[in-house]
Length: 197
Ligand code: ADP
Ligand code: 5GP
Image 1 (cartoon, protein in one colour):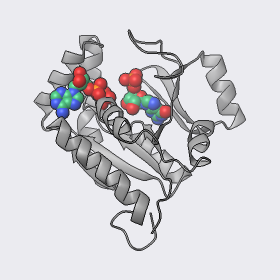
Image 2: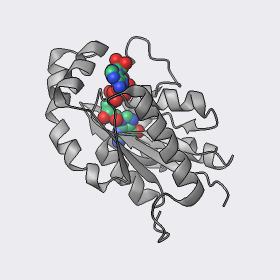
Image 3: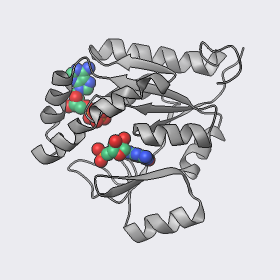
């Protein structure tokens, strides 16, 4: 059976290691695309425009919404974030799978818009480990850290709606798991044999 390009949505609590995992898996599989999201939030230190995100004004974002340019979009932490159809389709048209790194609500909306997308959840080994990573990254204020942590229980409650969960404890093990899951869904549609994915 050949490989089919798929849309992979990766979610999990802020600070769990999604960005790290995705970057490591793409080192091994450079053909995997990464859909750059649009956002109205300002760039963080070290973020590169058009690579980390398409940073844009509220006006530009809402104009794209009106054009139907988004697979899904949402507001978090007083800013808007969205996945562009143009990003997703540019990879699929080349026969390449594409990864979307977005939150739980966004992921469930992607599944509605793209029914055969594959939803992968990244969970922390513990709440304490998550908190340490979020603080260790040093990119958010204490207030923002508290806000992000307050969402974790809700996010974890939705893991069962995903096609698979990866616990990001040992990074190398988690990267292996992610790579194998992607390959499995590309080659045989994953474990489901009923054609629903
Ligand atoms: P996310 O994209 O989910 O918000 P990041 O990829 O930015 O998370 O990771 C948050 C922090 O945790 C980073 O400093 C990263 O280096 C670290 N990290 C990622 N995976 C692990 C791991 N398995 N063990 C320890 N630290 C990790
Ligand atoms: P951050 O500001 O830390 O980069 O992201 C904040 C939140 O926005 C995270 O939960 C992240 O997953 C989510 N996010 C990033 N891109 C998108 C997107 O395209 N759509 C949605 N719905 N959420 C996104």
